Image (cartoon, rainbow, N blue to C red):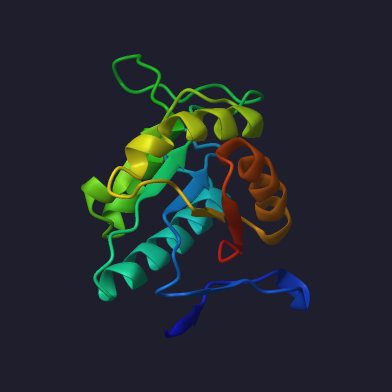
Length: 172
């Protein structure tokens, strides 16, 4: 099984390594704000790039790796509103960016109801049967985020999803 390094902490901190063939069933990308044009903030863009790299590495060995864009918005920031005046979940804006990075639409799942990390975990749990429909159960998920946040989010999602959760820290 070949190994690819997907990131690590700034300043020489620990690094997570995921084997390309490792049984990660899902990558979860958490929302974190968008600018006035609806473009995700740079922190979120780094998360999306890390998830896209992992998806493409899995595709190179013949695996479809779903990505769950997780989040409707952020509680302390106003929702993004389109030209017609409709609120658009951040997950939809994130999915648009993933598609621009070459991730196939049928690998992208949206959860646009949650507004915080605990809500992300709850809503992700409700979607796991849909996302892992080709497998009997979700066994392992990767969380794309910065090193410290990924470990915090992984712990919360581990409890909610009742599964092994890795912190994919390639979002630096």
